[in-house]
Length: 136
Image (cartoon, rainbow, N blue to C red; front, side, top):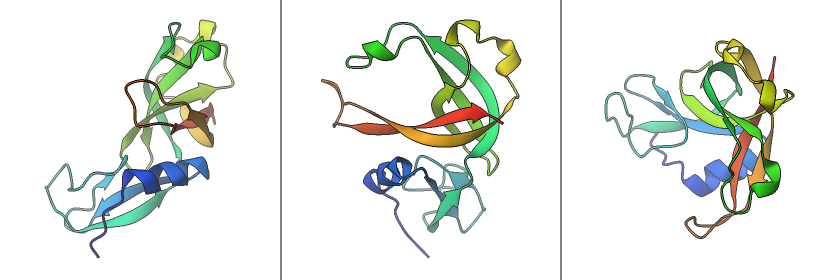
């Protein structure tokens, strides 16, 4: 079943607290955010998949200088999470003091609790959504 998951669908699902991806019929690779072809085998037969939103922190950074329009949020922690289904995704990490974030976060289990909307800036196409994770 060939289906192109467009970015608008992806962001609308995030706003509803769901992470969508695509699963390759040829090799089974799951990808999020959506791509037009499988990054592993270049297959174009992709089906939409709803991901659980659970995984492990692979890396993180604490942001002290925010992007335009997000100055009131600093400091905050951005994590790269390897989801249980395989793809890596960027999101915010809540529930910890950003100033106390340490290497102990690497490998910790997380779950998505919600999505956070952020305003567009002079360089984007408008409002976007990002998953927000908490330690499991």
